[in-house]
Image (tube, rainbow, N blue to C red; front, side, top):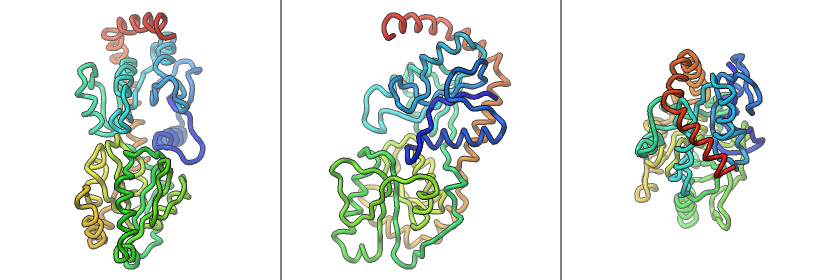
Length: 345
């Protein structure tokens, strides 16, 4: 297959979307497929649209570029991977723009059922020809091959985030930091490490802070701990909790966004009221959850296999897909092109 990916790979620590592109590229190239990061190649089999924002620094191309491409290469199938929403960062217009860009797609992939259900509530969004494929961390890097810590000593809690947005859970991380700072008994029993980027003027008192890391360096740091904590709110389908779980760490998570879908059964759910109690509970039940988390199988390999299978299926049904595009969307595309030429370009 010839596949164009819609994001540019960023070097060093970056967000989960970057890790997804790296995993897809490595897997598909190992399977003998050709990967491109632009639309210069003629007769592509699949275009994977990942970030349709025209001004995004990480986007390789957007839906306008795709429109121009398929006008000359009409046999190419367009797949839209939706991994974002307004609810994640309290923004306005992201959902609307994604729905607009989705009119260019023949098929849609969501990174969680929670995200798919969110978009299905919009009247102008067609959820037909779509499915959920969960994100997966690179199992060659994030795995449970090493367990450096002894939980019978100080119980070590860790989290990590590339984004410094408040919705990543800093209210909860600060609460844990205050517990460590204000209670000698608690700090003698527990330790908390935050890896990543902090909001401006945000400061920890008793938390171990490490700047953003990636790859094996990040994996080794995670493995030095006992439990992974995520307080992310309205997370569409985060990668951070997967990396912790794949490193063999039971998880403490909020029932918000996709988290229950990714984490349930491999740790404990908590809330603002019972967070402290759940920290003690997961310590007391550590061996139980440790044995469960070693069976966690949401990783990059399983994820990439699902993408490959889907792409082959779409190519097998190409004639049907292209007929549907012609019958239902050709008028939309023509009107859209006129609108873009007159109003936006």
